[in-house]
Image (cartoon, rainbow, N blue to C red; front, side, top):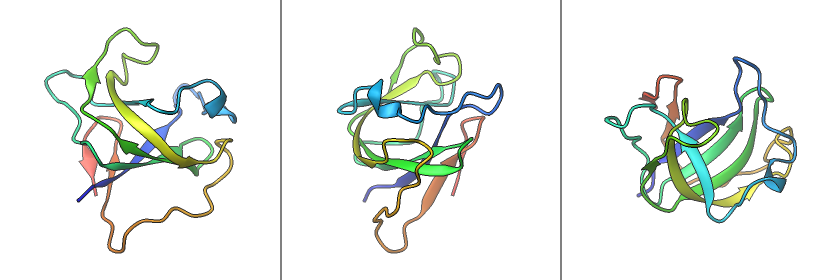
Length: 125
């Protein structure tokens, strides 16, 4: 049974919001989902088949939904690798084109348990 994760996008300090037309600049299948923790000894807990809800932190909106396709890779040579070095292959299954547009409906199974990341890479749910 897949787990459901809320994944923040954008940076509040220093402010770096998601671009309104974020899909214009990235490949969506597979989408490279960056995440924490920043240490190779501590891989993230998401796994193949898990679902991810994309949240634009500065805009305070849910703007996308995806499915994890495989295991993460620890990659240190990307723009954001210092903060988010783990990259998951992810299929974007739904989403709004602009990050300021909230998703009108995301269908989740009843009694879905949410797990959210914090800045340190630990989870709560």
